[in-house]
Structures are given as structure tokens and as C-alpha cells.
Image (tube, rainbow, N blue to C red; front, side, top):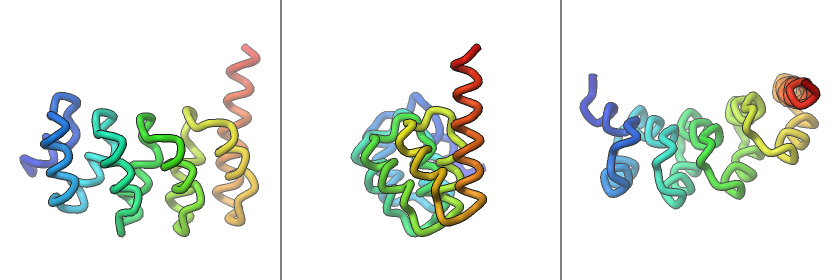
Length: 124
């Protein structure tokens, strides 16, 4: 296993190391950094513009990602990015509501299901 891959996903990795790995790491490493809740918000913003949809999706599903970054990613051209965001229980209602009206029926259906599940949990 790649040594950098392990560091990228660790919550104990210092921010300066995560930053350096985000800028110079391979796609797989950048994806792990995008998932890491310890990654600085500005680096998540940079990774939100990554050329690989998997990295953008990882940023969008990271609970630590800033709301403005998630909002942009919820409008991503790749339906897989939007779908991943639509299945996150921690997403703000406004984003899930918008995704429930997505042009892609799979994204819209997933967002509606996530909203319904949230309402069921609130009703309990």
C-alpha cells in the first residue's frame, strides 16, 4: 500500500502535510485527503475543482466541507458527484431539496429518499 495513501486518510496527519499531498499527490491520494475531515477548508476548495469526479465527490460528501463548496458541487456536471451528495444524510435540506429536482432521475430519486429518511428519523 502506498505510504502517502495512509497519511492522507489519517486524522493525525498535520495540515501542512495534507496540503502538500493535496497539491502533489496522485488521484487516489487526493481522494483520501478530500475525505479526511481534518483537511483545511481552503484545500477542500481546491480539491473541489479537481479534474477527477471521484475527488470532487469525496469533497462533496465530507462533513467538514464548507457549505459554499458543497453548493457548487451539488451543481457539478457529473451526475455521479451529485448522486453521492444526494445520498448524504448530513447534507443541508436546501441542497437535498434542490437535488430532488435534478434533471437526472437517479439523482433526484436518491435525494428524495434521503429527505424522506431524514423526516422518518425526525418523527421518531
